[in-house]
Image (tube, rainbow, N blue to C red; front, side, top):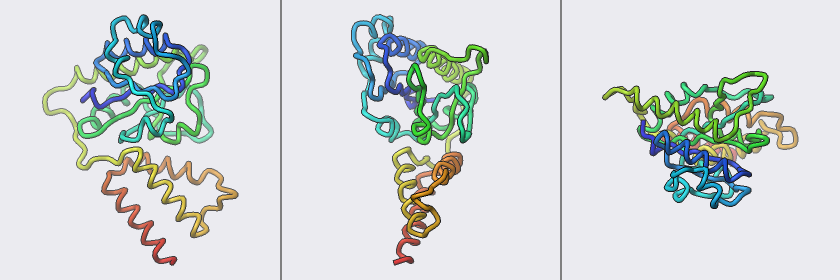
Length: 240
């Protein structure tokens, strides 16, 4: 696994100590890419104190305004979730996440997204994810501190690197489409579905959510997304 191709994304974190503790957990396990989405606290003395020497992770952090900005160059996006959702998303446990990341990071990037301390990720934010990951825990007290969750996931990623033998890594035959390319496709698809009358914008139900789940589960390559968009363009030209 190429750990340098894994980024940890923290969304709207409110406590600087959690950012520092997350940086420490990452450095413990060989991870270095930390992305903060619209943080609600300064990254100052308290964060560096909790980081306990993980200064380079904090110094090199990237801050962005939105989740799409954080993940646009990632081929696989995994959101952490402890809640049951009305529309189930493909789910991984930390070990199977590490296996998935091992394959993808040989030629692409993986973003693992952690939500707010008090509420996690919204349903809209999960729409950008290919998978969710849930850490098994006591069902009577299942909520983990965000830095603790990052420690568990980071450990599984690092453990995977220790288990690898030369030649074991799986390399995708074609590079996967990244998040920005997928978002472009979903917008194009929605336009065509509305123009053909298949999707009623006044009563969309959960059609686009279900289609997102379908395509993200398929993990299309860049070339496959180009083919799909070519088909959509041909439909638009035919209708004209």
